[in-house]
Image 1: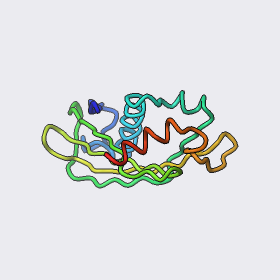
Image 2: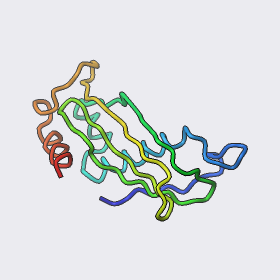
Image 3: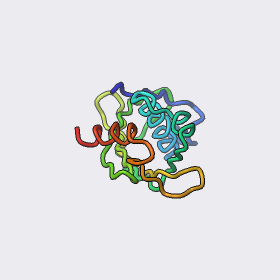
Image 4: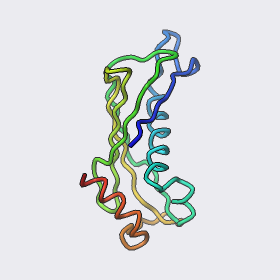
Length: 135
């Protein structure tokens, strides 16, 4: 996987010149969208196939503050996949320094908002995620 890169913007910082904690969640979404594009399952493709995948949980552990104009490299991997639940792990680095480790959990729903059996509804996506979870 190609690592996602985010250049810290001035508006993402607070009065102390440090990135506000809420921005890390946004960066996770940017990296997740990039990750899904890389594996061939972008959000548009998911939605067109009748799949909605909301975030059900987020966990962030902030290690080191980040500041304006720094380049943050974000790696994403499938930490767990149970067919209905997907957990992604994120590692955010500035050069060789880990600045944040995080995770997000997602479920799969149909367009009516009901839990979706991904293996039955979309076996190709199921196989892709299963393979990534077992690597």
